[in-house]
Each structure stands twice: as structure tokens, then as C-alpha cells.
Amino acid sequence: MSYKIFKISEVDLQNIIYTHPFQQDGSTVIRMYFKPENTTQKNIPILIEIPELLLCDNYDGGDNIILPLYSLNDDKTNDVVNFFNALDNQIISDLKTNVKKWCPKLKNMSYKAVVNEADDIEIFKNGAIKFRINESEFKTSFYDKQRNVIETSQLNKALTQGNYLKSIIELKAIHVNPNNDIALIFRTHQIKVIPPNYEKINLNSYSFYDSDNDDNKEYSASKAKKIIKNTLLKNKKKVAENSDNETETVQQLAKLVSDDEDDDDDTSEEEVEEAEEVDNENEEDDSADDDDDDSDEESDDEEEEEGDDNDLIDDEAMIEYEDDDSDSESSTEDARVKSMFKKRK
Image (cartoon, rainbow, N blue to C red; front, top):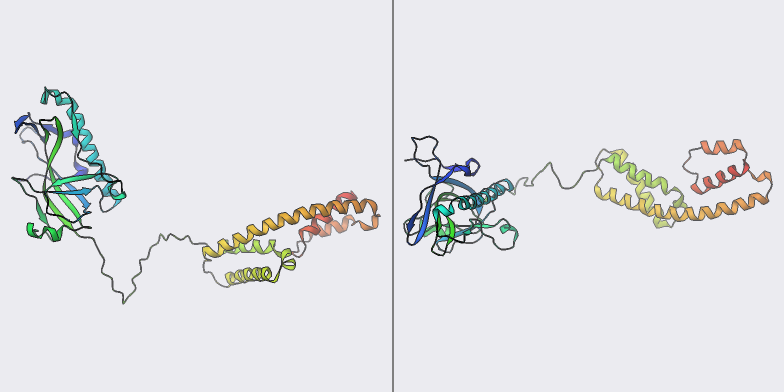
């Protein structure tokens, strides 16, 4: 008889039902199924396909395989984590509701979760699950990616670190041992071994990975040009006063502007950052110059009070100066002329 194998996204944990408990080797066993869709159906076995989980250690021939809740991508990892956490929560809720009926003499309830806490490393941060593959009356079937059966003698070669294991499990029963420890029993019916997907690359041809989402941001030439031009304008006055090295630096910036006008290629991020650093340094120099200018203005005011009107600039000359946008005029001279114009009024 065939049964449906559910994907974890199809499982409704609210549809789990339980049989009457029975005793087995001193333990209490409560079988579990999915609720049938109609009265003519029998109870449905809880068969679930678990997505690929990473095998972190080589198989040592034991009865168990421990796998972290770590899948091929973040979406699958989250699906597996959410499913098993929800399963544990559902079992605990059902135990609280039915434990007095199932185990009347049980005073303290200790439930062993399906998801076990593991080492404090990144790959085990979501916990791990123990898959039992060898039982006295049952053995797990193994398959490769081509659907071929993997014999028991070949498991050591097949179950190697770095492979992913997809599984089909069946939730069988709630088990209460004589020590009142409660656990969920599930059976691992099949495991499919999926090796890492390494791409075959021909190094005799183009082999780079091209991506539209490059980590390095692209800066337009116009934006870079604006920053560099602003830097040049602020350094007009400093060129005549600074050393040859500083003059050469500004000349290099001017060359960059010229190069940007000749072609439409994007300026690199490094060039933009260098221009911004020069801009910041010059703003600090200008701040120091402004302090000197303030001192000069005070001295000029004192001289004007002692001098005659011939030393003052008339209104018409002042207007002509203010209308002149020539880049060759310095900020110091501008401050001096404005000071004298206020004095004349």
C-alpha cells in the first residue's frame, strides 16, 4: 500500500492523532498518525521528506548520524529549523494535555527534544538532530544522486564530510521509559547522498564569475569631477604659497579633471576618496587662514581711522569688485574690501 510523503511545508502538526498507550519492555508507547481525511480511510503514517542537511564528519560505521540544522541555502535552513522547533513545541503541548490519561502515575515530565543543542560554532548554531540508521529490526536504505543503492560496505566511502543528506523519516511514537524520560521516536527510512556541486571550469576560456551586484560601488565621472573641481577652487590661493610638492599635487588633480572630460568612463572609488581627503585637509588650512584674516581686518580698521578718505574705495569701485567672479581674487582680499566698505558707510 502506498502512502503520501509530505514535504515539511505541507505538514499540519495540528492533524497529529495518538493511539491508546501500550506497554513494551517496561516502557509506555503512544503511536502517532495523521488524522484521516474521511471516515473510510485508515490512520495516515507521518512520512516527511527532510531537505538536505550537511554532513560534518565522515561516517564511522556507527548506528547514528548527527546532522546540524544547516541546509543548502538560508531559506531551506530556516524551513528545517522552524519545522523541528514547531514539532517539539507541538509534542510538549500534546503531552501537557494528555499525560495524565497516558501515564496516570507520572509525576514529573522530562521531555528530550528532537533538536539537540550542539557545539558553540556557527554551523551548529541552530542545533543538531540524531538520525538512527541501524536498528535490530530495521535498516535505513541509502541512495546516490543517480538513484543507485549504496551498499552497507560502501557507506564509509559515500558518507564523507561535505556531502549533503536528504532523508525520509516517519514520526512513529511518543516513548516514556521507566525513568519517566519522554522522547519522540522517528524512523529514518531512506537517505539520499548529494555531493557538493562543483562546477567544471575550462581554464582555457573565460572563467570569471560575473555579477551585476558587485560589492564595489560605482561612482559616476560627473560626481567625481564635481568633487575634484571643488577641491581645485579651494586650493587656488594655496598654490602660490605652498611648496613644489603641494603644487604638483594640485596639478595632478587638474589632470584628473581633464581626463574625465575626455572620456565617459567611471572614476574609481579610490580617486574620489583621495579628492575628499585633500578637501578635508584644505578646509583645515582655510580655517587657520581665516583666523589670520580676522587679525588683519582689525589692523586695517585701525589704519583707516587714522588715515584720510583718499585711502578708501568709493561705492562704485566696491560694486564692481563684488560683481567680479574671477577665480583669481583671494578670500582674504574680499574680506578686507568689505571691511573698508562698511567703514565708509
